[in-house]
Length: 285
Image 1 (cartoon, rainbow, N blue to C red):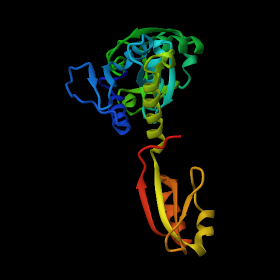
Image 2 (cartoon, rainbow, N blue to C red):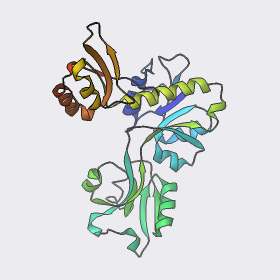
Image 3 (cartoon, one colour):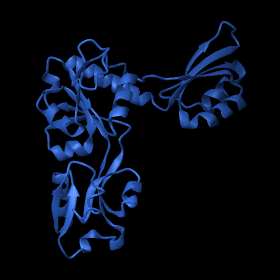
């Protein structure tokens, strides 16, 4: 089976990092190679432009693809969003010159020029908002277009808005939110590779679920067990096992990393000892 992944851009590194965490590692590093074998037998990576991935998956040239939701919507491709990933979050915004001092773009009473590579999304947005605009289709950096007098404003992706402001632009309206997704062909469940695809999806979900979680193991004296269990978070319930020394129990649970300092302090205060904290690679549900 084939997984289409970005060959460059802001999503490439986090996508490859996720696949490494899953255990799917490229076995070649040639930047010119378009199809790379991986450490998983029968799984290949197809290195293509991020914006082309939805159409490649729709055509069945790859069973899965990892790209941004903005590119999926823009393409109009008939694909299925299978997993929402925990990176690539950004906004697609309408940005106009700061000097215009515009807060509501629907109040503009003349036709303006908007540079964007998201022609379909922009067309739909402008129609919904009743904004008169001529679209200037681009494929490169959008934020320089107003400075070059090639457009009045832009519709583009931003994380913090800092780059826009450096170019004298103000994000005046949100067009849509975007994030990285795993997409599949609408008929992936009927393909010969369905079992392998399902396993890849299971491992991706398990890796994402495990992020930010820690496994905690501790020894708890019998007299303190009820107090510790009453204050202990868990995914379902803590696991407990009586040790060979009969007045002590081993207690195991999973805790969100952000809660770790408070949880450890509480456990120590209630009698837990020998607390061991371990990274979790995957949580398969």
